[in-house]
Amino acid sequence: MIKKSIDVKNWAKNRIKKNEFEKYLVNGKDFIDDNEIIKTLKANNHPGPEKIKNILAKSLAIETLTLDETAALLNVTDTGLLREMEKTALQIKKKVYDNRIVTFAPLYLSNLCLNDCLYCGFRQGNKEAKRKILSLEEVRKETEVLAGKIGHKRLIVVYGEHPRADVRYMVKTIKEIYKVKAKTKHGFSRIRRVNVNAAPMPVNELKILKRAGLGTYQVFQETYHHDTYATLHPRGTLKSDYRWRLYTMHRALEAGIDDVGIGALFGLYDWKFEVMGLVAHARELEKQFGIGPHTISFPRLEPAANAPYTIDSRHKVSDRNFEKLITVIRLSVPYTGMIITARETPQMRRRSIQLGVTQTDASTRIGIGAYSGSSGKQETKRQQFLLGDTRSLEELIAEFCRMGYITSFCTAGYRCGRTGECIMDLLKTGQEGKFCKLNAILTFREWLDDFAGPATKKIGEKVINRELAEIKEKMPKIYPKLIEYYEKIKKGERDLYF
Image 1 (cartoon, one colour):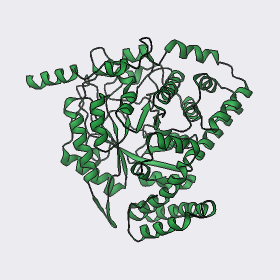
Image 2 (image 1 turned 180 degrees about the vertical axis):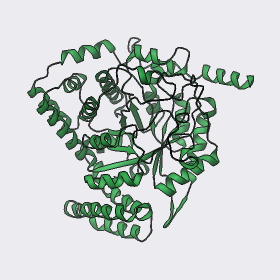
Image 3 (image 1 turned 90 degrees about the horizontal axis):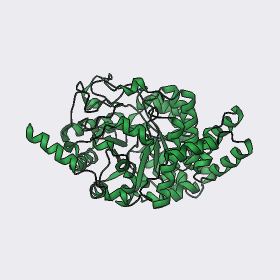
């Protein structure tokens, strides 16, 4: 027991490599200037209609907004202008991503953690938490449920910050997930893309993660406000180093990882400040590496076991302001994928899709081992926080169909090299949506045949027929090849893509 304690202490002691982020500082300062953000918000407190309309035109041209422009949008109060902003946000979403919704599942592999964040159920100080790290056999069982019974094709795997869940464990679990071939009535189903949500890592470990088949590397700053960050992440913990976390994506891109995902936990500090921080982060990555975040996430603070800040926070975000921040993120970083999670209620998730959201999770369980080893009920001692929407993937897909959206399980772009700078160019010009529209039809046909009940299959086929008719009209040259692939999939072939 003493030996384990010493190992943990030594491991933590050597984690942070200051030279890997200090080289990006300018005159000893990072790219988040708290005072400047507050000043910019105040300076744009009363934007006029003409200014807002010019900003919306820039967004519609798929150009990243400046902080001044973002601040102006955040300060709009006129009902008519807000409706115009929402309308433009949806136009941008359709221009860049068409009418697709991408689905995934979170898979929590470990809740061992050295940190003590005041808003998290996994924090070290929560002595009532049931701690567990999955074995490779348990990872396999979880994956068999997700791929073989539910039909997911992509996962976000989540790890706490602990030496037992280090990069070697990450590599082993990622490879195990990719190996699983889960039986279905037409053969087998497998996970085709594994994204990772984990603690900040040094460049050498990120290179290892890349070679293991990592999809998107996702790390949230939680809050961009320096003082609040220091308050919520106790001194002496790994997470207390604001800059080590802030420059995570710089190291990831430096390590050759193509796609990175950023986010903030709304409710820790003023929501307008956090939106400004996210946009500043996107612009910094564009400046340094020529590409911005592949995805932006915006989870809201939810109740968590023995996490006092989830109750006491003065900065909880109302539904109305949450809708506004989603709209402004879509307008400010128009090319990015936007993720809303099962933290939110079904009503809010429906609303968010009309404001530009492109990705969401489904059939979500966030207890360790919860897909294969629990009743499905939420258990506070095993979860990081409580969920607002536990509906199945099939229930969400049926709803998306009724809303006029097609669910995409496409992962072809990542295997065809449409990642990093390449995908950014395609997204900004609206070209990526064309590839994905074709592959959405093929992958949705797969899912309907392998997993859907009769009612969902019926409504899903109506969506597919509409999509096929549109492609026949707008892309007549590619249509015959699409039909060739489509018929093969109906006969049982799988994983055909453009």
